[in-house]
Image (cartoon, rainbow, N blue to C red):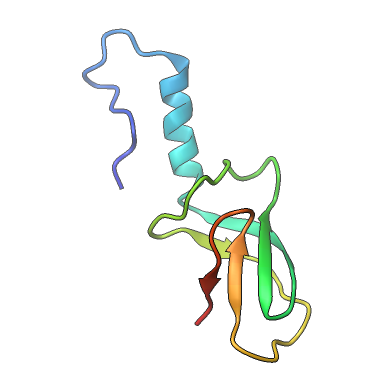
Length: 87
């Protein structure tokens, strides 16, 4: 994955560009979540640990423990993002 900002060619970099790179790198690890629900689970990323997620992207990994047993096909949703099937 390429980072959003490449500093080598910049003559006047600003701190917000570094923040963009930190946000991108923060999404590369496993994102810890609180989990609720049975067959339609909702994952809530732990506040203060993970950069805000505005969309799904390739290679995102989420971690959490579901406290119940599913009774039918499962779906998952991270925060307010779209619902996806669980395989």
